[in-house]
Length: 281
Length: 315
Image 1 (tube, each protein chain N blue to C red):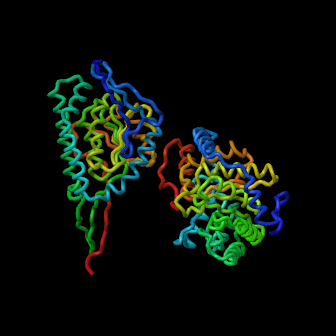
Image 2: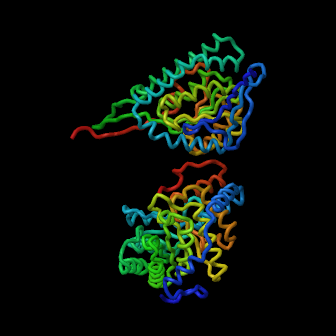
């Protein structure tokens, strides 16, 4: 019997619930910790950014309007799917980083736990960050947190799965939709986790994931008017430039500080609407 | 039957002659047409060519609102948009026309006074065309009376499909006379004509009967303008021009929403009938949402950044 050939996977983009090649047709090689070939991944172009933003915009209103309970259930479901694939995810993390199995599993576990934590946040944001405000007059006054809209999230370049969950799940649980750019060097585990959204009832377009070269995508993403929030966690050398580009269209930006309270990211992608209403009658 | 108004358009003594003339048209090679359309769709326009094509497409738009819920206010905002599609950039070309139902023509006329934008009106019991001829003519007359520069009529598809070609021909002629100088666009409703051969025959019939434009669709049936049908109609127009010397326009209507689609049609025109037709005098898009997509692309070219749809007024 002849020797079996490995079936190598090409990692595609996730746009509007579909796994697509880059519009440009390009791919790049992803290597493991010692420089060996791991897989081919799609190298997204500016037009892929445009398509992803259109998809995210299209999905945003209905994602936000779905009940907090449902959003929580969906994110929790995603964690459930990930739980049953822990070993596969850990394997990808392990090969990418060249670390031990236990250490890899630790990152995966932390990522899944974070996902559950964010799932829990969906129905608490309004209570914690909203409120009924005392005012001097015969009025009710409410502060209601609302999502920014479409958030572009640059995943940490070290490829930490937990870090990736943070940048995508924080805006998602507040009712934003997300266009995420995975780490250029270590996109595989993030992509494998994102693939699970297809079986977790995450509506198409709510989470879109691009892989590729940030140098090529940064300006398009940051200057895109229809991007309302920008998480610069993994933007590295481009962070300042991206923040400047995004200022043209008044985009909320988040840059992590050492010792950040994890809710700071959550709060960064919330707008507060204040409503006045007359009392009585 | 009266003699066709344009010189060198043939006249037909009776329906038998008309039918014979239509039967003499060669059949449409559907596979070839599909292939050619697919091939031309791979052409890509870039940079300055793209910018010019976007401006050209904008100038070819018949900005259309044909809903039962249309109000004078909606027509007013549509007219304002047609005159100046992008208030932030006065170099943006105006639309070719605003297309409304006959009862709103007077409103549109008033709002478009002093601009280059024409008023077009659908008539002849649009969209089904199911009314007695006298009613259709009254419909046309009212629209012209109210100030319409262009009339979009529908053909009687029932008559065409059941072979009463003379009736279709006579109706177009009668409407043409009622137009009193207003440009006549004849809607073939290609989505209901079943075959490309029928599209070709209907195109020739309409042109012989005096159409200034042939138009694909009402936008009210499930199948609207397609590039395939567009190519067949453009070829008919080309052959008609060669045979008779008169230039007939083409209007693609319904379902064209993106800049990419619009630019593909421009390529199709250039490769089929030539650049003479790359003008609002001889080619139109019947659309409403297309305009915003063109404006978004135009602004993208200008600013270098993708823009949000909210930048432009909704329709």
